[in-house]
View 1 (cartoon, rainbow, N blue to C red):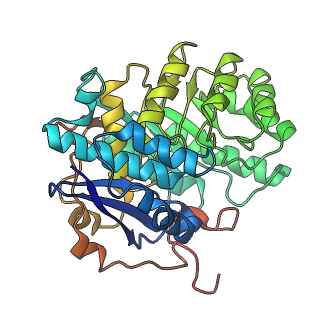
View 2 (cartoon, rainbow, N blue to C red):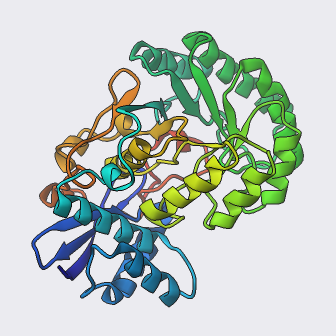
Length: 382
């Protein structure tokens, strides 16, 4: 079997253009991968176009060789483009052998994985709206919710903002009761002093974690914040090197990380990171702010990796036409996602539907701008 072509398909999801990769083979089997990148839509798409000739003609079943070739060609860099091709090759391998990918990683360790909802809090940024929407999710049996209550704040909070943000979090906690986990998203926005200050008053709301309170690139400062925080600090979605995870988890700064598989080499890279974390008794909660294809990819990993704490999921809050774009993706039921048993990733992309939703340069979130949490994308003039 040989790779005959590698194509990119961009789908204009309003709050983030999705970038998919289709790897085609001489045997007629094709595989899917994802290289979505927010405001890096065109760079990520063109990155695939630039390296695909290095993979065309190769045997897609020899995944390690293909990744090694691309990694070295990129002067020892692991990029989302490489990860997308890698994931698509795993999809091909599973379809070729007629087994789900988790079977190729050692077999299933769980039938389903608990999820936490994200992307649910669009609309008015008020304690009442946050509380009402959180209650509706608890009624659907979600047992964990993540949200960013900080609006457009950056680096530090003034007293009025702090008071208002506390009201939002209190509204959510009161709405869902004590048994639903709350994860607070920081989006890397604070300095270390402010992050520690916030983490101290977050303890009052019994939060499961404070995520990315500061820049992921500064691991020493992440460790410092973690060591001075009474609530769990998690990070990892910004790490693009396995050594970053080793430094963070070996410091005993946390017991949960949130790797982004598109940054660490796809499925193979995720398995390596899971091994690193397992040796320090640290669990994984894979980052997942992209499409249902990404969800299905993460589910294969959740099916095979022991040290999984929970899985992030936006899929309940996507556009209505997503069901037509992905006619067979796994959906959340009673707060869980079942591990799919179909060969490969277990998902198909309807390219006819994809053509109905083309790329738009304004399909991205203007973080730190008022109203970004509505996830309606930017204005055409921005």
